[in-house]
Length: 101
Image 1: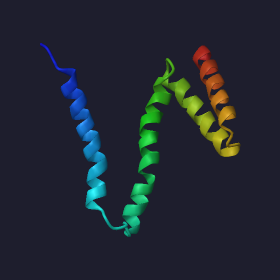
Image 2: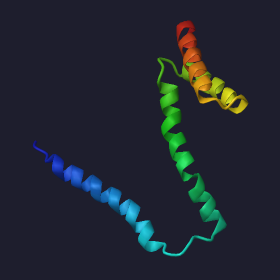
Image 3: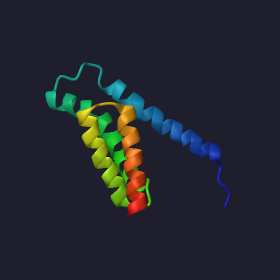
Image 4: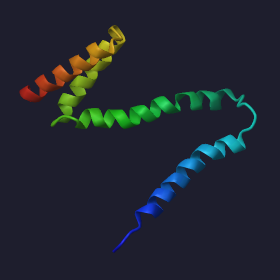
């Protein structure tokens, strides 16, 4: 069974182009609806969360170690806001939890 990779690349490019151009062509006026504006504001954050949280839980050998590192990271990020500190602490917690569990 032989597949042409160029067809797949062309199809992916076409879908990506359409997803970006259809809203631009359909919505020429500014969106004034408060609900729609609020929805569109949070879409990037939700998309990033949906892609990140499963990776956090499955990055280690056990989901418990990932969940513990996630909890520590959430608490530290709200307390300090320092990305290097939070990332380092999450790595250490995940490593220690992996060794203990």
